[in-house]
Image (cartoon, rainbow, N blue to C red; front, side, top):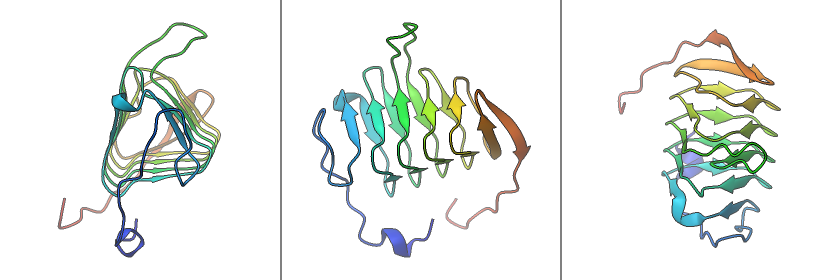
Length: 140
């Protein structure tokens, strides 16, 4: 992500169960750990009851759902989105999932297991499509 885009980035005001000014919502906000320079798309829902960690420079498309608890099947567990990962719009991430650094998840994916670093994954359920070459930045 361009550093210019986030030149004046500030942590958003997050109130439990209310839309942010960017039109995304968090339930159980005390369980959310949000890194710097994140971009979360409108109408994304985050349930952080059992922990959601979104590390720095993560981009999440619109209309995504991130669940640390599933009331359908009773699964629970922390979700971790590692540095520089990108989540395509309309993606669902289930409990107890970690998405690795620099990984891209294609739009409309259903992620129910860990996805390693430096991967492009997509589908329902999400599967690894290919490994991507990642340039190292001097700051890394």
